Image (cartoon, rainbow, N blue to C red; front, side):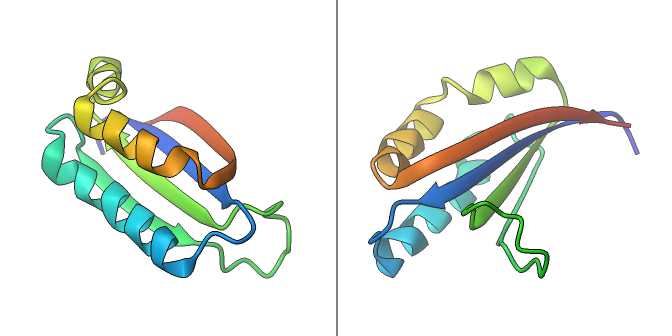
Length: 102
């Protein structure tokens, strides 16, 4: 496997955020790879851990890039900024972590 940069994003939604809104946010994030060429791979899911240590975080999104410049292209990209504007008012807490694999 070649060296790749993982960008992990986790969300804790505000109490009362409607399921339909959460589904729209999921779909909007999942649409970003088709809108931003710098994204190499993408996956996401919801917490199913039995350990009970998610601290309220329910959603995890994993965005993969080939390089730091690709990530740096993604962050200010208009499609990403549009997504940030959509999600901002519905998230209680977020956690973002980047790390290298390979």
